[in-house]
Length: 307
Image (cartoon, rainbow, N blue to C red; front, side):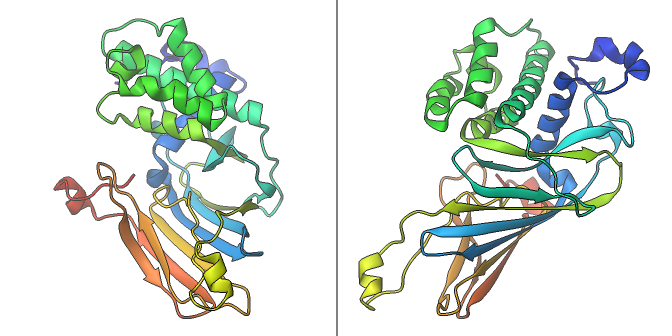
């Protein structure tokens, strides 16, 4: 059985009234590490407000995993209140972020400080547990501070801090070598922030959450030539949530006067540096692009793996 930082609490878990922040953080990070195992479907809709701004609306269907999915000593009970990560969003400004719970009521957006506190606590517990599994002791204070600072810091500072992951001679670099999933999530949380929703744990139940926000897009390519009618206007939308669910569907709606001549969805597979064309559509005001995770047989053969 994998080591748990809460193993010494098992004898008193029956008496606990609720999960403490460290346990809640461990649950959140465990869910984020295994998105495709419980996030069944993600539908992302992009509506252009103008050529620089888009409204992103998302619906996610999740199936709550059974208690054994979670680490020993930090397992939620049925009907217990926990937080569920719905997405990883930029640490930059998002306009009009709001969300809707499965019962149709709005869910409050957890403040930045509380979100990063839970993320940092969960990552620290799992990385500490990994070191113990490999025969080590506690994480050093430098490693603890670095994990916490990288999760809380703006992306440029976090990237600088996380350069240690590329050096196997450092404590964290040695622990998280060979593309360890915890290294990937730590990098993601250096650049992005988890969107956490307060939820009621109901093992086996399928529920749908919805949320939306507006964001500024990169300046379109060939803008001047497009304005003169020589070229189509080419826009790019990055940071889509492809890979964070078992099935992914993207819808793009253009203004009434615009026809989308071609839309392409690209993804990058783990272990590859090139981008792969996943889906293509076009020739109408709106496009639908659907992506499924690679089949298990290809993944076993080493031909494909998802980020």
